[in-house]
Each structure stands twice: as structure tokens, then as C-alpha cells.
Amino acid sequence: MRKACLLAVHELAKRDPRVVFVGSDITKQNLEKFAAEFPDRYLMEGIYEQHIIGMCAGLAMSGKIPYLNTIATFITRRCYEQVLIDLCLHELPVRLLGSGGGTVYAPLGPTHLANEDLAIMRAIPNMTIVAPCDADEMKRLMAQSLDWHGPLYIRIAKGGDKVVSSDARGFKIGDAIPMHEGKDVLLVSTGITTQVALDAADLLAKDWLTATVLHVHTLKPFDAARVLHYAAQAKAVLTIEEHTLVGGLGSAVAETLMDAGKGGVPFARLGFPDVFTEELGSQAEIMGKYGLTSANLAAKARQLLS
Amino acid sequence: MEQRALIDSRGKDHRRLILQMLVGSGRGHVGAALSVMEICRVLYDDILRVDPANPKWADRDRFIFSKGHGCLSLYVMLAEKGFFPKEELMRSCHFGSRLGGHPESRKTPGVEASTGALGHGLSIGVGCALAARIDKKSWRTFVLIGDGESNEGSVWEAALSAGKHRLSNLTVLVDYNKFQSYGPSKDIQDLEPFADKWRSFGFAVREVDGHDVPALREALKATPFDAAKPSVLICHTVKGKGFKTTEHNADWHHKAKVKPEELAALLAELEATP
Image (cartoon, rainbow over all chains, first blue to last red; front, side):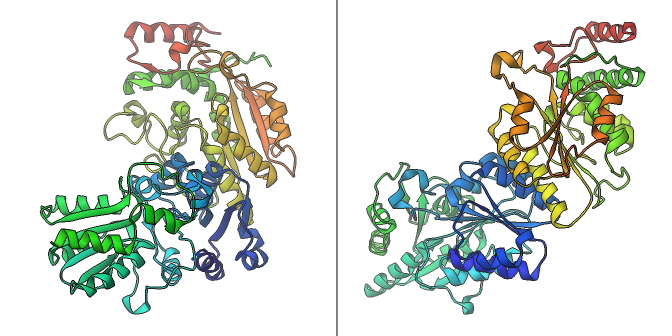
């Protein structure tokens, strides 16, 4: 997914002279062609995230469209004030490409996890947040990123994730995509948990239960209309996210349902509890420990429906 | 460096205006405004290529007012140059005003960036200067920072980067008034050897009396000090400059609710000063 993202930045740079790439001491892989073709617009900077966010603001104020890539948690937590003031208050078209969203860096420990990035980015006015589900969707997103108004945070997953999106279902920033349709339960997912939700839908089908999987790739602006539309047709609603339960997808769906007076529907949220997930191991092991699996999602759905 | 320069009649006019704004708005960071007044004056009189009728002119020089709390002086100069009517000065901070207690680019014509949280402006300035270089444009970037602000690590991140990129189209002005909110900077976080720090980060450095208008003009006209480096002009200033009552006085860092007798005493003091 990161490869698709960075190669897309190069393609965008060919199309538009405003595109500038900014990195923070990251690997050269997938950037060699950009660096060779556009050395003036290729800025590989030091390990100072506060500075490069402000620098991208200055570039954008002067007519550029900077694409900044580094580890997700370092461009969300470490320089939150710069993101909030320099980018969002000024509504600047800076694209933050966050590598290792969620628990991708599980073996590296809690300093490298981005389990609250969606929540803290969601709290800032003017921010747009997208978590694609696979590399193909990343390409569709990147094609639309050039002309998107204001700052954009893109959560990049591990890579090599199973491709579940398709051109046929389309992609538009801000529009949730129904990936599978059924009448019994609504599973709302984002990022790579859409794969988990689709697998859960298959498991439920074995019990003659049908599920709609609504892929909310854009956390903000939030597609409340589609969530309400599909929730109205379901007997239960479940959300799943590779993220803390504080302030992410599940919170947004709950807020949407309550605000619309639809809070009566059986409802459950799957995500990380309000703790530091300190276990090491793989992303799959961490997600497994906290129940972010298709089997658990299907089991919770059966519970709500019974 | 001693600050021997006297405040001339225009400097006194500016200070009267700042006091009137303080009364009109009910509050303000007086000390910082008085220490940067001459820096702002020389920039807008003699250095910056800007067009008040077209504040977003693409080829304008960029002035990032990073120590946002000193903005009363910025507003005085923007009004004087015609970016907005002078009458608006008296209503700053009020509901519906375009002038805030810290400068905001989305509200106030002529303000390049919204600042107030310290340590942001120099990075923004580095980005502006890089953009001008990429586009091969001759417009320049000036960033005003404070000495207290220079406690922020992000200032030195930006300084490293400006030095690395050899941004000769970038000039940093430091308002070195040696006084912070709590008291003397040397008691809180001493910055010395300050000029050496900038030199070691790759800057060409000059120092000047920040209230000496001809000296400021001469120094700023000499930028870049080195054709292959960013410039920094360390402006030795006096916090609260112009009134004995306010100089080096932490009570006047931020002032709300100025009493009429205090105002009268300050105005009288200004008249009596040679």
C-alpha cells in the first residue's frame, strides 16, 4: 500500500508542478524515480516532524501541494499543534502519508503504534482522514488527492493486504462504499478491517445470516447519510476498527445513530480498549488478542441478533 | 550591546497608538509590542515589497510574525500602510473584529500566518523560502521571532533546516529583549552565547540596536549577509521600550484593564521624554 502511495505521488508530480515530496529520514525505496526526475521538488529532511509540518505549511502557502511521508504516529502525535495550527487552521493542501497506521509496527512496541491517530485527527476542524482498505483503493484515493481542498491524512496499512476493493464499486473521498449487501446485520469498517468484516460476512452466511459491509474509508468528513441508510435496514449494527474505541469509527457511528434518534438498534463496537496494547508479536496477534477477527465479529453479530 | 537609540517623534506616535489600542481592546501584550515597534517600522517602511491594495500579490515578500503576541506593532504598521482602516485598531480583540490578540491570516489583510503558539513561524518561513527557490522567484522571506520563543526546540529544528538548505532568501529577525513573562531571560533560560548558536547552525549573523531606525535599515538592506547562507539579525531591544514604567517590567508583559490614571501617566511620560 505504501508502494502504491509513493509511486502515485511520482505520477502526480509529472502531472502537476505544484507537487512536492517531503520525507523525514525514510527509506529510498519507491522514491528513486521521483528523486531522479524532480530533484528540486524532492526534499528528504531530518528527523524533525514539528519542523517539516510547518515547512509544508510554508510551501503550501506559497502555492505548492506537499506530500509528506513518515511514520504515522510521528506525524499525528508528536507534532499535533503544528498539524492543528499550521495546516488545519490555515486550511492548506498538505497531504500527510502516515506509514504503519494502527498496529503495523506491533513488534516494535507502543512508541511506534498509531492506535489513536484517527481520533486525534478527527478532533481537528478542516482535517480530512482516509484509511484505504488495500493498495488498489490507495491508487484511487491518490488520484483524487491532488485537487482535494485542505489538509488530508492518509493512514497507510502494512502492505500486501488482500485486495478487496474494485473499480466497479468506485471511490470518492467522503463516500462510504457498501462492499457486500445483506439484510440482517450492518458491519461498518474502515481501513484493513474491511477485509475482516467481509470474512465475517462469509462466516455469517453459513448460518443463513446476511450482512451488509459498509466500508467507511473516509473517517472525516463522515458519511452519516450512508451509515443511517444502511442502519435503518439492519436488525443490528457492529463496527470494527484497528484503533482505540475512544473517538474513532465506532464513536462516529454511535454519535451518528444517537444524533439521528436511531440509538435503539442493537449495537456493538470492536476495537482496542482504552489501554496501551503493550504486547509484542505481529499485527495479527495483537488484533487477535483484542478480538479484531472475523470469527469474533461474526460471533458478536450472532449474539446481537439472538 | 547597549540600546542607546532614542524614540523619535514617529516612534512616539506609534506608542500613543499602542496605548490607545490597549484601552480600546481592553488588553494586549504591551511589552513585546514596544520592543518590536522599530523592527516592524523599518521592515514596512524600507524593506518589504508588499502591496496593501493587493495583500495576496504572488510576488510579495513574506513576513512571518512568529512572536504573535507582539502583534499590536504589526497592526500599527499594517494600518499605517493602508491594509485596513486605522479605526479598526481600536476594536481589536472584540467580537466581530478582524484583529485578534494574536495575528490571524484568515482575518487580517497583510498577515501571512496565524501565530501565537510559539515556535511555528520559522518553519513556515523555511517552507516559503524553499517554494520561492523552487519557482526561481526573487521574493524574500522574513521571520520575526522572540528570544523567549527561542526556548522552543522547533525553532532550532527550523534553524538546522534553513542552514542545510543554505536559504539566503530567508532572514530571521530576533527580538532579543532579554525579558520573558516571568522575568529576565538569563534567570529562566539563558540563550548565550546566542550569536554563536546561530553561526553554528549555518547562519550569517549581525547584531544591531533594535530601536535604532537608521542602523536597522542599514543592516536589513545588507541582507543577505552571506550569499550562501540564511541571515539572522539579532536585534537588541528593550521590552516595554519607551516608558520607564513599562521597560523591563514583567507586569506589562500582558496588560488588561489599564486604569485611566495609568494611561495619563504614561502619556505624560512620553511627552516628557526627549
